[in-house]
Length: 307
Ligand SMILES: [Cu+2]
Image (cartoon, rainbow, N blue to C red; front, side):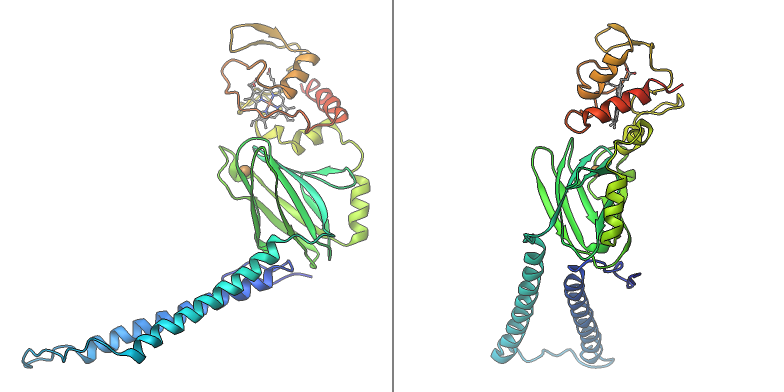
């Protein structure tokens, strides 16, 4: 079912969204109300008590205290603050406490790509989930600080190297939603976007089955974000192009010249900093532990055939 957004907010497509949205609009209309009261009050008083033409200067009577008035403007805002606090805290706890029966998807963030790994072992670069089920994302980063953000679900969490962070959501609305990296993470940060696809349970199972076989190298080249740094057509990038790479004579940063073979390719992918190509920054993340042995074979086979 298509969800409708409002002027201020995108569609509310998760079970967490309504509570946040109600609180948002409560604060919004409260602010509008006080904006009007204060602005109108200021204008009315400025006009009413201005010094009129020909009128002599006079002092107003000097009152300094009005207990009921002071109680009124202290107690009412305090109550409003408490309402916002309790409301916000309850919404936060709803987000913070992950349901025990949630399905866990592992998320790996790296410059400049998201990789999702499902309980069944399949991997993908878009997030596919069944509808009507709580989903837990267990996330970590391979390099720098990233942040996962799904506006339509109202969820967002930093993704940090060397530790896990998590968040959860449940969507009862089948459809496609945007997923962003919302923490500036380097040159190609703006392309670190993908989709969340919410499908029925049967469609989800079917998709998992189709994705459980090791894809071909050209698919992996995109899935693992090699394409954000390495081109296939010889044009320059953050890293050397893969065009005609097999047998190429390459000068390393320490002056050594090597000839590219399969073992060098393997080492470059698993230990990128072992030999750094001259003229390039050592920015490539390691894919040790990210690529399964089958995927590594498949990607090396692909790279060496790029002509
Ligand atoms: Cu990022």
